[in-house]
Image 1 (spheres, one colour):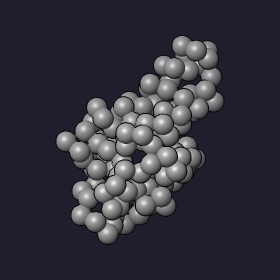
Image 2 (cartoon, one colour):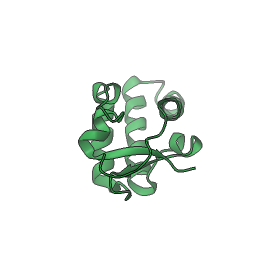
Image 3 (cartoon, helix red, strand yellow):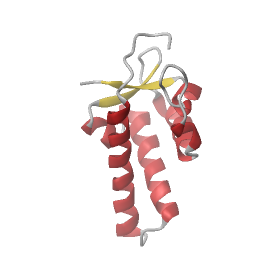
Image 4 (cartoon, helix red, strand yellow):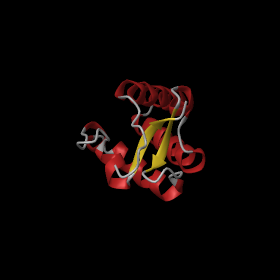
Length: 116
């Protein structure tokens, strides 16, 4: 990373992801008879909208995290969309680059940082 943004601990990132996924499951179960594609769609829509507007998902907010560009700025809608598409492909979210960020963050030049 080119900036001194502190990468959030993996444990917090995983808990935030689980919170967001469980919210998507609840939406899918409540409105779409627990359809797996509805779950993925709800997760993706929440991620794109929330990261693109406020810089993090509800899970990130609960865990005190935020998504930032490497220069410290907010990611905006384009980076949020690209990051979310890559994350929904699963593999870019599982593997990491040497600095500890997942590939979806490295490709989009973003990082998840502690904000509190």
